[in-house]
Image 1 (cartoon, one colour):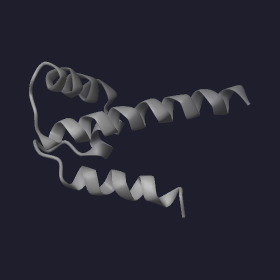
Image 2 (image 1 turned 135 degrees about the vertical axis):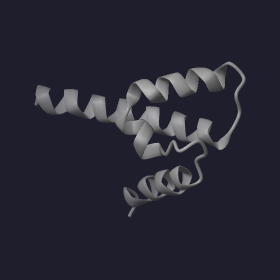
Image 3 (image 1 turned 60 degrees about the horizontal axis):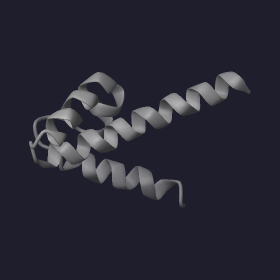
Length: 72
C-alpha cells in the first residue's frame, strides 16, 4: 500500500500540470524536465513547475535504480 501512495500522488500532480507537461512526460524526457525546472528557478511559476520537479525527481530515481540493477 505504501508503494502505491507515491505513484498515486505523482499521477494526481501530473494531471494538474499546465503547458502539456505531465510528471510522466517529464520523467520520460529528462532534458525537458531540467529545462523546465531551470525556467521555474529563474522565476516562472505555474503548476507545470511542480510537474517538472516531480518528473525530474522520478527520472533521477529511475536512473539510480538502473545503475543499482546493473551493479547487482
